[in-house]
Each structure stands twice: as structure tokens, then as C-alpha cells.
Length: 105
Image (cartoon, helix red, strand yellow):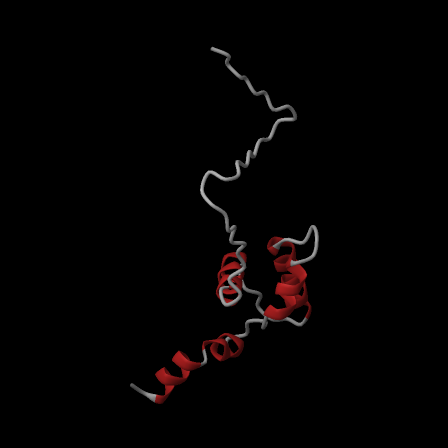
């Protein structure tokens, strides 16, 4: 284990900046994604444009999305539904009319 290896292991973002990659403000990305009609693809496009303006290398979309996923993992945004099984029925359908048949015997 060398000092160089230890530094790369502990500070991977520092290595990316030294290689010429434009740093991303993940807090800003996270806040922008909470707005209506904002996608990760749109934010990556804006990030790439700003990186090219300052002559830095932007992350590819795949890397951008993976790194955002790692950042967002700490928030664990889920919506648990607490109810008894079979108590409520939810129907998710894409058509306008729901047809229900009841059979009388």
C-alpha cells in the first residue's frame, strides 16, 4: 500500500478533477430533479454545455447517472405504504374506462 494508492482510494473525486473532468454540484442536481419536467438527461446536457464553456471534460451520461445514483443513495427516497394485505384494492390502468362485470348466480 503506497501513499498514491491510499490517496486514490480515499479521494476518488480529486483524481477526476486532476484528470480534467468538470466537477458536478450534486446538491444542485438533486434539488433540480425535484422540480416538474426536469430529467437527469436534461441536467446532464446543461452540465456538458457548462463544462465545455470552461474547456473541461464533462462526464459521459452513463457515468453522470451512476455517480448521481451513488449520491442519491443516501437519501433512500421511497414511499412505504402501511396497510393490511387485501384491505384496499388499487387498480392502475392506462385506458379511460374501467369495465367491471358482476355475475349473479
